[in-house]
Image (cartoon, rainbow, N blue to C red; front, top):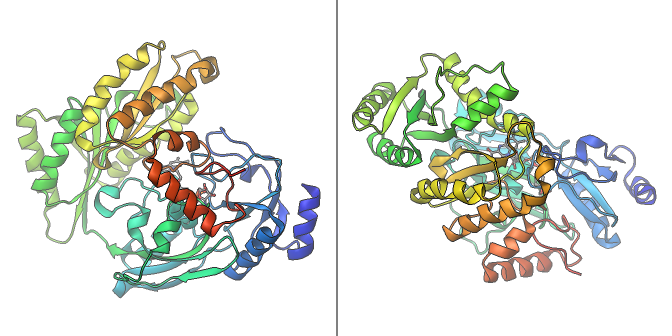
Length: 467
Ligand SMILES: Cc1cc2nc3c(=O)[nH]c(=O)nc-3n(C[C@H](O)[C@H](O)[C@H](O)COP(=O)(O)OP(=O)(O)OC[C@H]3O[C@@H](n4cnc5c(N)ncnc54)[C@H](O)[C@@H]3O)c2cc1C
């Protein structure tokens, strides 16, 4: 490592070369920890290009790093091979903003929350929204094709990106920063790079879509009898409210129980915890009269017992309180410590059957706690399995893989995906091999090694490293 550091220091100087400390070497859930390695923090696209070109010549692996909040170990590599970490954190500029065109161009190191603020300052909305938005960066969001809580209305990171600038594995700069909404000029390199998790190049900047800011936003917490009622309710409300449902988040009682156990300062607005609840947000333009229309729709749903109870936020503070519940589920889960977590997606109408059929299968492995929550409107469940109270996940190490197989086999049988929004990283490489379409995998290998002949970009992430 010292020799490699000296090599990069001699070539690029100490301004951009240092040694990665623990902030860069461990992912949020602590599943992946890397050895110390040289850390490169370039300030310009040209510097990124120079570094990648040098790595390609010297056969040094490059692990791209943005905010470090990825949950599948894509940004963390433990290896004795020569590797460096390349962080885009110093490339944070808003390069340009065109409010009339609803476009913003930002560098890859811009923190997601700052992009939202920059849009807000010109009375526009950048709708990508994740609980990690104070730390994750646009480069990482695009590299993982992040989802979040507003996909239902605005799409995921891929849908929000008009153009990309990137450095390819030989060091060449791809200038695809056009802010066009129509551009049918052959293969779309932008879409190859989005979701490629750093295996095809380093994203250095992006042109992103903005939207008019909604004038009215209504937030509610609804009690439903079961997930099936939730699915019917979503379809019903989408029709009655002209597609203005922005978020539709399913929450199981276990989420509230975990919060009570680990984050007691968070206020939960229920005396008796509902088995299933939905956090709903609807938003619309001037004169949309959304609050009244939502209330009327909910009253009708209560008559048919699709909704059992409804709390509608009466102030911005109360809306934030409802959202705080949803946003703290991952933190409460982390404090409990899952044996195995799964970020899956399913055809929406099959979700109730999936949720019904899973617990008996897992019960065969022992007394386990399940927390199932997620973006119901996107068919995306976070289906996580925990030890019983008083035990830790280490006590269940022996059955971790079995749990994952049961969840993923069922997901696959239901024509779902074993990675809805977090990506493959290093965690799910075997799952991609097991469940992925063989022709797709062959095409992915061909693309990877056509662009990255030496396999330097994020070795071992997404695809197994070629011998
Ligand atoms: C509390 C919490 C909540 C979360 N909620 C959500 C959620 O709702 N939806 C969701 O989708 N995700 C969620 N995540 C996961 C994570 O925040 C996202 O995957 C995010 O997009 C990662 O961005 P990052 O900047 O942290 O990237 P990093 O973690 O730094 O990197 C992620 C991957 O992208 C690659 N990469 C990073 N930068 C670049 C670049 N410039 N060019 C090429 N490749 C690059 C890395 O090598 C790695 O493979 C959550 C995470 C946490 C901790």
